[in-house]
Amino acid sequence: MFEIKNVSMIYDMDSDEKMYALSNVDLELPERGLVGIIGPSGSGKSTLMYCLSTLKKPTEGSILYKGEELTALTPAKREMLRRQKFGFIFQKHYLVPYMTAFDNCVVSALPGDPEAAERAKSMMSRLGLREKEFKKRPAKLSGGQCQRVAIARAMINGPEVVFADEPTASLDHENAFNVMRVLREYAEEHLVLVVTHDRSILQDADRIIEIWDGRISAIKDAER
Image (cartoon, rainbow, N blue to C red; front, top):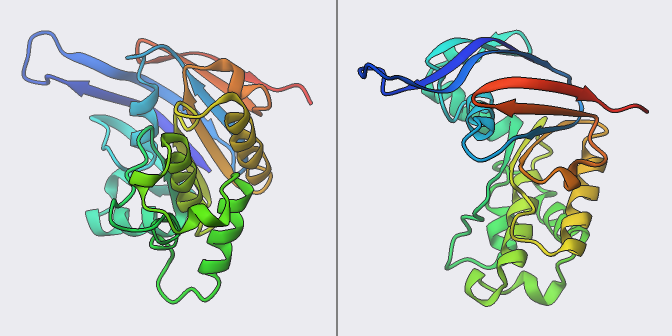
C-alpha cells in the first residue's frame, strides 16, 4: 500500500549543522495489518507517521500510496485523502470543548452519511464508554474517556489507514488493552500504524519497525 523511497526530513536546512529527523528511509507497508513503529523520544517515529499521512512533506524522497505520489498532490487533494481514507489518533484528544462526546465523534463523519450516528454509538460502546457519558462535554470526562472518544472519532468513516500516535498513553492498563484489541480487530481488514515507545502494547502486532536516530534499525514480522 505504501512505498517509501529514500525519504529524509531535514530541519535547519540553512545551517551548517543540519538536523535529520529522518535519513534515507526505505520501506514498504502492506494493505492491512497492525504495524508498530517503535523507538525512543526523538528517534523520528512520529515524523515518519506524519510524512506517510501527508501532515508533513519530506525534504527528500518519494512516498507512494496505492501507486500515487503523495508528495506531488496539491494541498486540496491531500486534505481530501486525509478526509476520506485516513483516520488519526493523536496523543492529545483535541475534542471540541463545547460539544458533547457523541457530537465530537459524529462531527467527523462524511457529509450525508445516514449510518454515522449508529456507528458512533457502537464504536464508543466498544471502547468502554457508557451511554450517560455520550452526552457529557470533555470537561466532564476523564482524560482517558476523552482519548477513547477521539479514537472512535478517528474510526467512524472506516478509514483505509489509521495513524495512531501513542494512542494509549493516557489510558489505564485495562482500557489500553481494550483499545489495542479493537485496533487489532480493525487491522484484519485495514492498515493500522501505531507509533509508541511502549513495546508491551505491540504484543499482537504483525510487524514492528524499530527506528533509531532517524533510520530504520530493524523490521520484525510476527511468527503466526
